[in-house]
Amino acid sequence: MTLPPLYALRAFEVAARSGSFSKAAAQLNVTPGAISRHIRTLEAWFECELFHRNGPKVEVTAAGNALAMQLSEGFHRLDQACHAFRSGNRKLRLKSPSTLTMRWLLDVLSAFRQRHAKPEIEMTSVWMDTDSVDFTHEPYDCAILLGDGRFGAGTESRLLFEEWLVPVCSPAQVEQARMDMSRCELIHPSPDRRDWRRWLKRTGKFNELNIARGTVFDTLEQGIRAAISGHGISIGDALLCQAAIQSGQLALPFAEAIASGDGYWLVWPKHSARLAHITLLGDALKEAAPQQLPDTLTLLR
Image 1: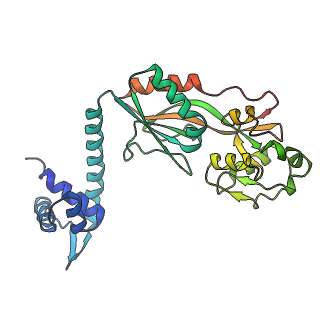
Image 2 (image 1 turned 90 degrees about the vertical axis):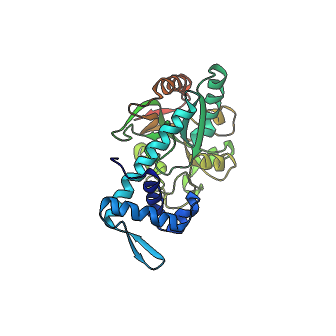
């Protein structure tokens, strides 16, 4: 044999990750004594100590930690391979930010499912302060992310559409915003207030406006909903706000929209076994991507 027993490696990896023999035993449905025996088997195999033992307390050694990190990655890859083999050509697991999902993606995927029996899209919508994906440790085949197109050396990506930032509010607040912005409540879709800062800097408007004030949310969607309800002036993505603008839920108090430098990208790991399905989905997303900005807007790059 060129490898120690797989069950011993698994027992060690879980114990190192949880920091406890008893927790590892509960997770693997064995006794703590069995975990201890598996680890002693590995220590004899590798001829080094993997855990410091102090009565019932255990602490992984530096050597054990190095081994555990590599084993965690290896077991994750095995899990991914088995999951992919089990689901065959039926599923494509997609990660997507929450605002994009609510404002655009759900309708696009509904149309995609009507046109294509395969693959089944298993979509997970999550909040991300900074959009990212780790295909090594997260259970996704592809993701739609807001960014500048650089998502890591091990990935491929395709631009779907650019982000254009513009102030939005309820129709009832347009006149007040145009008369005196200093008296309007600001809505920030992100805790760092980056979207208002970007828009003000690029347009050169309202140099004295204090962006430290206002209501802070976590997502563009929350900012949009607050603006629709009349709680202030938010910054929105002009393309994702199109439907709300056309229906009269939102209005544009100012004509300037700025390119943030980011866009929504479809991202996937290099050499993906699901490339044919990812390409099919990418074509559908690109075809359905919102492109037509309101004619009244002045676009600033």
